[in-house]
Amino acid sequence: MIQIHNLDVHLGSGKVTVHAVRNVSFTVKEGESFGLVGESGSGKSTVLRVISGLYQNRSGEIKIDGEVQGGRKGIEFYKKLQMVFQDPYASLHPRHTVDQALTEPLQIHKLDQVEKRIRTALKSVGLGLNFRFRYPHQLSGGQRQRVAIARAMILEPRILLLDEPTSALDVSVQAEVLNLLTKLRIEHNLTYILVSHNLAVVAYMCEKIAVMNQGKIVENLSKEQIIKSQAAEPYTQQLLAASKGYDRETARQLLQFD
Image 1 (cartoon, rainbow, N blue to C red):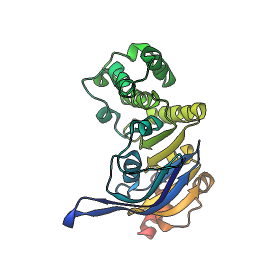
Image 2: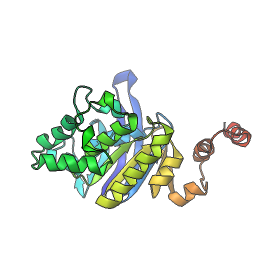
Image 3: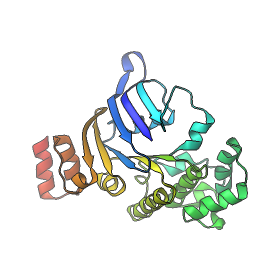
Image 4: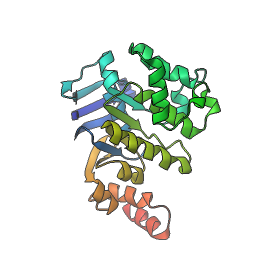
């Protein structure tokens, strides 16, 4: 479903140019969930933005469902592929109700049965119809992210790009959103690329994981290797140690890596 080959991305220009992504390649099968993990600034979110068409200044080949992607994207591309952003409050218009947020993509894509689609979308993310005419500031963080997911799902896409979809949420709410995304993927045979700095989240959601550092993929792992802490690269070992939380042994290992 997704093929990335030798992707290179430069941000900025002149003396302030940053080589954000370096020779990144990976493939994601239909119905598969693929994880990109790494610390802030490793280039993982940039990869998502290039795939979605938000960043244009890149080289390398991107294929979506067998079609090579150029610079500008047509409307059919965005019906097939949608993105859920990290901060649900920033990604929703503060002066638009939930109803307006869900209606807008239907109008852009000229889809019919608006009423039915909105009701179905709200139900699919576990929100009742009483949320339909509320504004983002009247919702909790978890509810806002559910609206953002509903907005992406209302077009019935085949691919979802997930940019740290739970990192802005309370810990108690994160599991609910992850379970919702897992349920939607199974029900609709969705293909995911999930970006996160949290290895526990990636191991829960993804079958295959690529670890990024300084714009490059430094290691590819399976879900089982993450769970068993079977990493070869010191950088990945450091991420695994950090994901276990603080204790004396973890701190000692991190000092050894430094």
